[in-house]
Length: 292
Image (cartoon, rainbow, N blue to C red):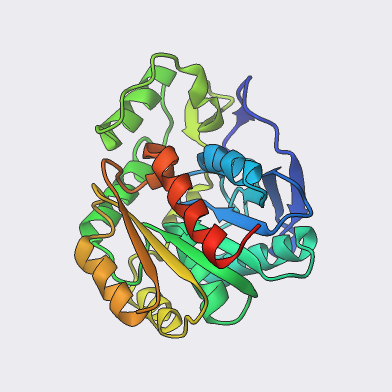
């Protein structure tokens, strides 16, 4: 199943891999495949396209950057209710790394939902990693910020009548960003149904089964954070309403060897808000701990 037809101009994925349970996982890559693998995992409601700028920059710096749509997002397959838990997401990651990696430990860069997947994968020894970058994600987050994301994802379940309505919804959620003058860039965010309605690219079953704010999952993340020994960087958006400064400091107390960067004028979607600062901070960190 899908949310509808892809709109003209929607980028075609460069790769499609087999995920857990046969779910197809769509991805893009940048840089030399012989370079050190960096896997970029997006947040809930995003797609691989959120990493395009960072992926290109990493590729130019000598790394092999790979970004993929999480199951139930973008061009990856829908898995249905009950199949969007952390274990399935980690297994998708493990399979992608096994397919495109060269056997060396990879570098994981995860934002929000993708950060949780990365933290579980490393903290539970499911994926061998040389370094970990968490983007606006830590075990302790602000429930109000999570509810705001969920409210955004839950709006208009019957679809939008026009792309202008889609643009307005995004602008309301991200008031700190200038509203785009053209609407064709929204093609990768929505699908067109047979009823003429525009719907978000994600599986509604994934939205209903999210566990980001649930206590057992947060405790699982905390346990994983306690086990981290590899080079780790936490990047927080200075305007974030999801990861507060208190939440960031709580993680740094758990993982005292971790480095920390707070990106001014960036909210929860750090890479999209200030890709220049974000990419520079990540590359500076990686060049020191895991050179390309």
